Image 1 (tube, rainbow, N blue to C red):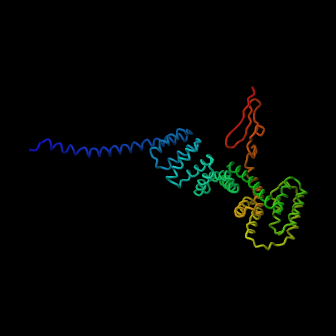
Image 2: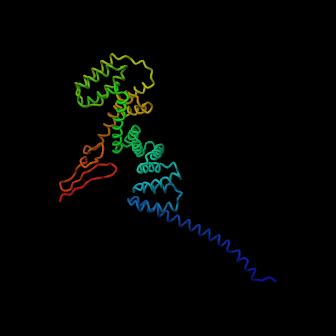
Image 3: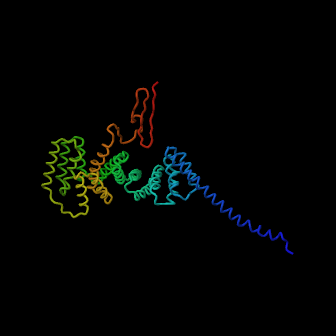
Length: 383
């Protein structure tokens, strides 16, 4: 005989299975909803803190956000940006790396990861990311400015000058771009002029630069004599070769009208007697382009043309000459007027007390050392 209680127990044994399943579904739904609400709140708090400049609070909120949702690259990018702004460059680099692992085509992580690597003194790693950022946004001035810093750190002044020139072109009000362009151009002038003096000290191009330097110093008679020798001993005195000496007219505004007339007379005489060049050299067209751009009042473009030629032939005398002249005329002279007339500009920061800049009111004084990376001063109070 069947026990009546057994019939009632069988349903009870089966009931926990569907009940447990429902409970799991309910818990999962509650957990999902519980995660979504705090994440929205965290993000709202992070944005508010970031807008108010409370970066530490914003960073804490983003850290909690990526712990909840580690698969959203934008969250990692926002965290990296806050860490970058607070000077946590190593942590920032790690956050941007996470973002790029999830989505390599993001622009901001590429840019700021490159800037972080610069701050961590890793210019080669910085170059890779900044060049990728440049490929994504070629006209972004921050990218060009970062590349200028990278190429300067890698001792590539030609590339640095080009990058700084791009940054200045895209953002003419950016004084850092003009300052970097000026310093890179000074380095180019020293490097290319030094190369020309080393490999071809007796060439007409080296002597033309020497004549220009004499003219800069006000040594007019010596300069004119040197120009006469330059145009008189040139192996092939084409119009292009006469332009190498006349570059001083366009670059130097302080010479007297008498000196200009004397120099033009020398050059006109040389041009009338100059034989036509019969050489069929591929580089002649490049040289003519450098000279033509220079005399069309486009010295920046002339410097770029010289750069392209130097990259192919590092000891090309004529290209080195135009690089020096074009950088002297365009980049050095262009960036300086952008500075305020009340701005004191120095080529390098002061390293000693005697080379620092003194300011004060007679009671409270300071000596400023002028390092661009950080402020350093020595304060003195007279009591």
